[in-house]
Length: 184
Image 1 (cartoon, rainbow, N blue to C red):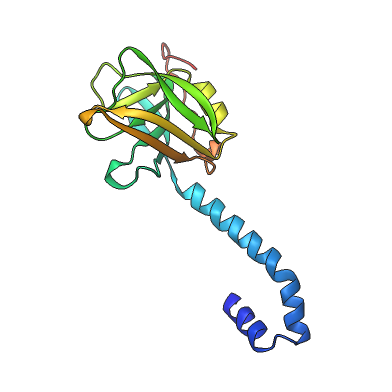
Image 2 (cartoon, one colour; image 1 turned 60 degrees about the vertical axis):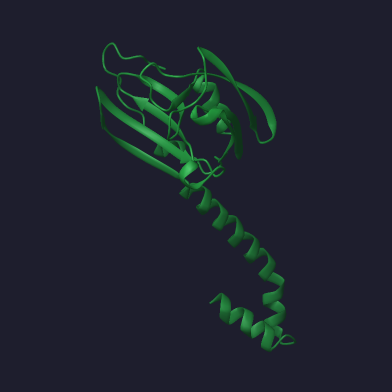
């Protein structure tokens, strides 16, 4: 349909129909671009709900756009019926450099922020954000987050970039907390 419109406008530029189309075309193109970008950003997120060791887990995850490919690092929002809510980075390789508590320099739409984080005791290639709810609240108002981390693999410094604007909170499902589970 768009091709027919463009062809008609270019073939008959002085026609009344072409003039009418040219008046509405910029608005249509603008809406099409906005809708395409919205679909692209929403498509970056993966939502899952299912059984996980010790309970039920709901996750929302997005890979870093930079670095990408095999070096991409997932940003994961997790709700677990026994473990509660958490936000963490999950990479490949040997994980992240962080002794005890560490600070991750970050930006939320270019505004600097320090995130307190820690490495889990189990040796997973993960880095957990201490104040998960504050992170989630700030992320909900943000289009792009960057985080400067150091990977264990050769003390390699990376700036991770996440295009988070497509996050859909309703798709990240709540889970029923088990008795004794950590509630957040």
